[in-house]
Amino acid sequence: MTIVCESDPLAAQVLAAAIGGELQIVSTLGKVSVLLANVTGRCPVVIGASVPIDEALRFTAQVTVEHPAALVILIRDRPTDAEITRALAAGAHTVLDVAAHDKIAHACSAVTAPQAEGKIFAVFAAKGGCGKTTLATNLAIALQGEGQRRVCLLDLDLESGDVASVLDLDTSRTLTYLTGKREVGELVDSGELVTVSPQTGLDCILAPVTPGDAERIRPAKLGRLLRALVSRYDVIVVDLPARFSPAVLATLDHAHHHVVVATPERPALKNLRVTLDILDLLGYSRAARAVLFNRSDTRAAISAAEVAAVVRGPIAAHVPSSSDVAASINRGVPLMAAHPRHPVSVAIQRFADSYAAVLPTSAGVRAAQDRDSRLGCSPHQGGSNAGTTA
Image 1 (cartoon, rainbow, N blue to C red):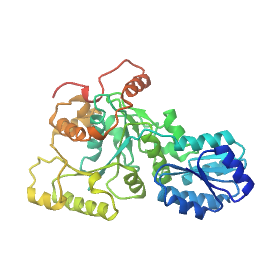
Image 2: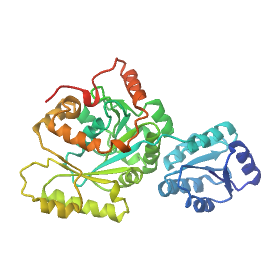
Image 3: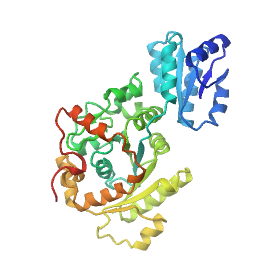
Image 4: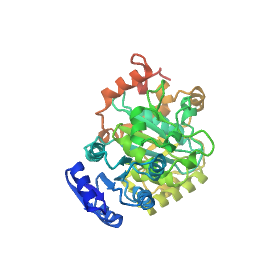
């Protein structure tokens, strides 16, 4: 269903004729909120030109947070660059001229059309220094399933992301692109946000590197980015910072799986318990949660009973410690890609395989073709087949 907010009856009729299909016309934004309370799927919200711009933008900023499935299409009479920039910053899906009937209809149909639903893995650490980014990177490679899935690795540690360093990638393309006036879907489709890792075949979207850019990226834009990615990838692995922030909460709201990383030291366990309690208080499903212990074989004086008391549930995976992890980071080639039979790689692969039954694989063949065409080479040894045995 499409919701149209337009107080001018004649303009409302024109929009209805242009959009077609099932729609509901209301005269105020308050009535839009009432309708959205009962909406579960993706829903275009068309805000007509009669709604004052400031009022429309305040509503857009609020509704994109409270109702992530609502995509606002703002209609203006000859929209200016300033209006477009402000609207996209507020979280609008697009801004269209009141006379662009074909574009309005296309925008609404594109939102409501059935789409593939990729799965989002949000990797979150209870405490800094747990090896979160390394695990997120290796997990993304493992989830490729020997080329059966198209995977995107998204670095949302906006202030100090390390994915580019771990994979030795050029940082000319980052999330800073989201601060412009281009539509998020257009940026994703054009590939302008993506940096391809030649060693792994992963599509990577990198965190900003310029001081101050992180603050310019709105959570609403990140929500739109995640919605765009799930229709284009089988799996999206998101590397999050070790703290709760608006960007982190927006990601957790969209994520299908929450992977909480910790290490077996008392400070880390204390922070793990606090993190799990906060996730419970925020209402996130425990069924979607997996606790992953990194460097679990270190000689720390932590008993199994202490760990069990903190987690209050099963531990999804134990990843052993190894000096080879640091060496792989320095080379810019993750263990999962260079040495898939290394004990660290095997532990991560087993964890990834536990999700195999619930992950889509429809983009697999296209993934290999797209990857090789982007890299400009014949099929290479990427993903979990790459490299030699450790």
